[in-house]
Image (tube, rainbow, N blue to C red; front, side, top):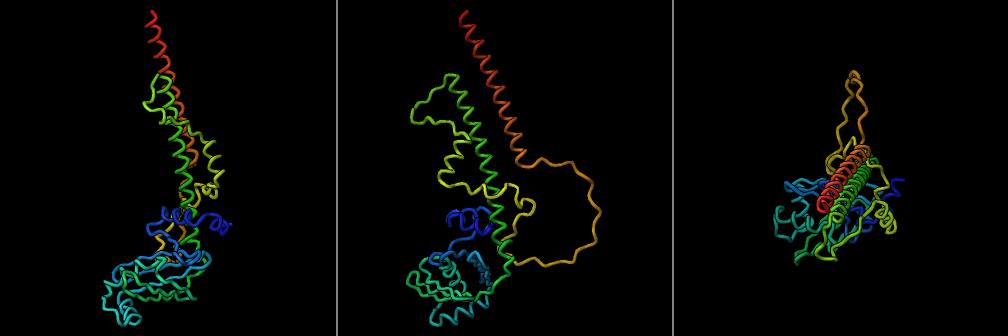
Length: 278
């Protein structure tokens, strides 16, 4: 079921969703089919995380190892590690990087700006279970967040539509007829999105994984600690209102306030009209 989600979403949608979920977003490697990567460079070295959506590979290189491999693969290149690392970072994921992936080795042969740079990422596989924590879980979290944002935006637009309608009923007119819009309406919005196949937020409930947000994707796996003695159970708490119920309650309150204001405005308008008639 989870793998079906990945292949249902377009690649661009997948990348944009993950960019919202992590400070270091997953990106598509141009020229390598169905390969996503995260690359972080600093302190003279880098961390690379790579996946084909079935398996994860990684490599962590410090400054000394980077310089040593740079000299090994580019003996004629006159550049320091500090100069070469930004060039490598620019080549990672690019279509012109000359990338070739063969088992645990990912080779680059970049010639950006006429400067040749060869590199080998010597990857090690991560346990398959890491795929859930580093990719699937953040994706589901991001989808849940997108769904909650969508509901909030629809409620905001509906409130604006009611406000505009009140202005029209009070006699306000647009200066340009081309600016007129029709009320959005949640049903119409859902129908139009469904007609275009744009319903990814329905794949997961907004509360999925809410209690445990994903860790930074480039962090090492957490160290397992022996469980401590069990703590006494906390006192019973009253059930908390979930996000969907809270949004619905706020929507009802907003609707009631707007209806009350509309009634008051109508009464004031009728009162003024009556006085004018007198």
